[in-house]
Length: 199
Image (tube, rainbow, N blue to C red; front, side):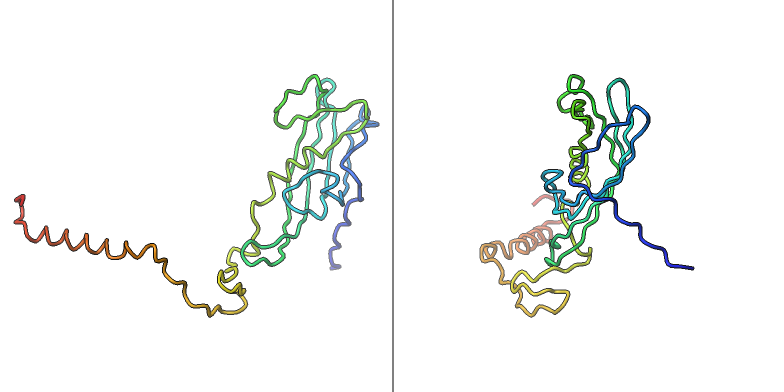
């Protein structure tokens, strides 16, 4: 059996805008790669190297247009424990409805303004929103990563840390022994009173 070949990456694109010419004749399907996401999509949660987008565009009710598809993105960020470079992949399905400005209610979820005069559909908004929803809040190279020693900064996974244990906080010294003293006093009171009587 011959080895399976990896699928080639989608065609590169400078922006996430799709021309609507020919939409009246049927759905428009596109697959492309945004190679400069921070420039084409706006502020993103991670420094994505690229974003692959597959989209199908159809006419919806009236003058509205619906776009739906998938996205895949990759970024390299530091592990929050050991600071090693860690690769992160995000994959998701997305769905967006575009309406003329007069039919868009501010704050309406999943609805975007359709600029009919431009003849294009700008996918930057829904793609950016989905990336913010799907991107992890923090990144770890593995769930078992022991991280760095807080004293010397050694990578605990690579070498054992020989730092002495941290000194106890002097502010807690006044509280030491309070628990034991209370327990002893309670035991003494119980032993001094006959069962069933109140001293």
